[in-house]
Image (cartoon, rainbow, N blue to C red; front, side, top):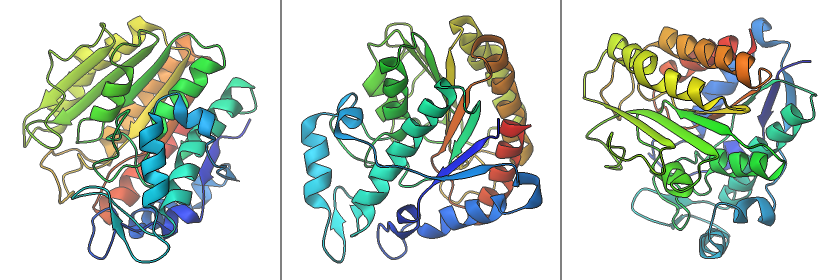
Length: 306
């Protein structure tokens, strides 16, 4: 079984406007990093569109209608101060969420065990009711709900993006079948993710102060995140793979490097081998240094498929 790489050309055409940090160059850097002999075993697959049924499991009809209605025929349209759409944005958002659902189908039917979704726009800030923080639909949340609809009872989402995934937390706040575990810088946008935000016991937040080191990140994972995931005994592990905790990232102030992403990925794969038949799906979130994106994606995907 070959590991899978889902992407779509529309994800390269989505634009939030000139000078916006969430730019097409981000995904181009990711794809360049994976265009290497060491990743030749990846089966590259065109991401399908998410269906209305898949989106509606986690998003209110008003959000879905808003994103569809805001999509411009030309130029740009703002959803909030940080989040904008271009003519290709709706298609990109549908393909980004659809990629994770397709990956779920593949790992559940046994045709693959691991998948990486090289997609944008990112998703983890989109709540049940509101697109925000560069995100239109919550790609990982849509995929997790899709997995539950296929009969799984326990899905774990691990989010190591430097920003807290407030949208994913919001969507699964009262869902004991989904564990959401996040490390993130605090204080920082969006201002959520305190350690006492625990949902129904299924939310695990480990905020890290600015300038936290690789040691602090790994300690938080060893002492809190990884034990929580292991206790949950997930049948599927999903990763919100943001690489903006890297020391080169211009939008935050943590000090991780590519080896840290390799390490946490290997730890999660090991848990998946024990509890989830090795099933791990990762989807791109943030990361705004192109150099860091190349290095971190290569390290993460190498660990994912090793």
